Image 1 (spheres, helix red, strand yellow):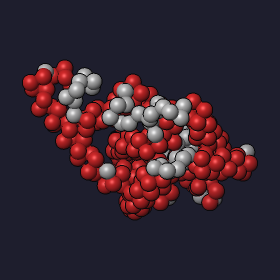
Image 2: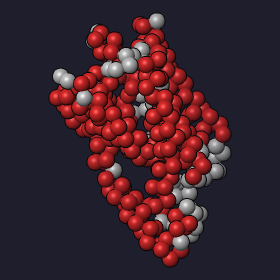
Image 3: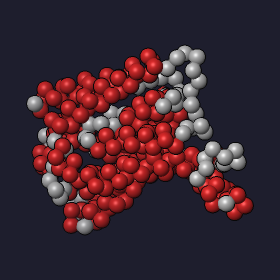
Image 4: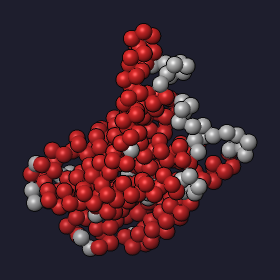
Length: 288
């Protein structure tokens, strides 16, 4: 489960969807039954896997995060002479590019953070079932393939792509808001982020990097906020399993993001969209 979580969280095929479908396919009925309960030991176990995934991402991007926070303090120093209001004016010529990217990541995290706190529990209880996950995995395939088709039709060949240094705050907010769809088991967080990034004229490499950087605080904060479940009564008897799973999730996430950052320099979302449709349809037939 740790390996599956670490891979499918970054590959745009939905980790939560696979976390629901895999136990059902393997006949782990106690896990399947617990998934849609209001208080679930299996969800406490998944919390550990999410924290492990986030740590794998942090290890891979540690230099990037270090430069982002250095940019924050650099810009903070500039604000002493230019005024505090300069921290909000991203169009200023003297804005530090690393600070600007950090600012975009922060505002992009806000929508999914708020909606997740308000609705995540309700959506999990309602839709964390194998058939629901299979249907949403099909929807994920449609999103990925539809995004590819729209990108090819709407972007003129002569039009230059936007890079992260010129990404508008409004578009960063839209990309972050798209992650709300990933609260439904079967919809990929990275997938919808990349598709939305492409629709805002980012190229594959920049869209993927922004999606992976954005996933790090979202996954980490979601896991940390729910760690009390793992260390409370729900975690009795599963803490060592969660620890081992988290280690494997961290390793899988590290190598997955390492692979995908190279993949998206030359390749597209097509294979992941086809995979989501095939597996989703097969699971709809299996559990329908």
